[in-house]
Length: 270
View 1 (cartoon, rainbow, N blue to C red):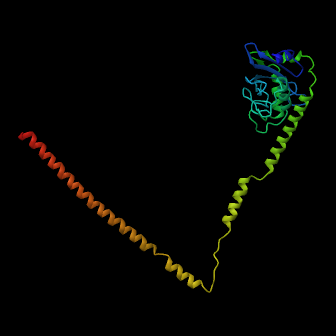
View 2 (spheres, rainbow, N blue to C red; view 1 turned 120 degrees about the vertical axis):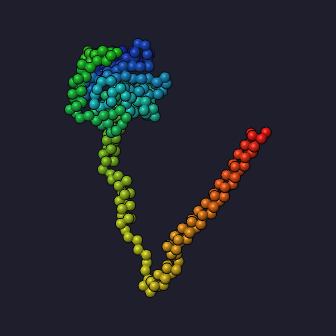
């Protein structure tokens, strides 16, 4: 595999290699970006390549506690499997590692697999990462400590990193703007309260007030009389139902009595 040969020698910033028994799983180590809370840290993880790679993006999983990404969980980046629409087949594992380093100082903004630890907490984790060991690869910092200088970025890689920086800035600005906007639900509730607080009055005409009152009295039935009529109807219906029930009970008893007589007669007289 061409990429395995190109990445065989560690650089100052990253190192990656496939597992001996699985070319679709790579382990990598990146150095924390300088002049950030990750400076001095060494962060190890896994890259899972799909069968369609490089037509489809890889999935990236961090294993070293870092305070920016959750460990043992696929992280959401524009160069990861969560966003195949932004992936370009010309990109590579090296491109993904450079993008990961560029994304580390950016804010999580609630994306999948992101964390927002304080700078102090991240600095503590960066110091601890030096002695962190992978069960498969062992101590991960040793290879980068002895690495050679990183190769020069290509024009495409530089453009990609600039795009990542702009996208991260846009996400932060969008999140800040959203937090300053009044929630739509609050506006709806305010409108509802205002509508409820506004009294509804019918137009009144003093000259016709007496006439309108008499019309309402003639049109509205007497509630008490209506209730009495309903009660009487219910009682009459109940009485009729009781009479029918008694009649059928008597009929059933007579039939049962006749059947018993027939059985006794058949048993004792035949």
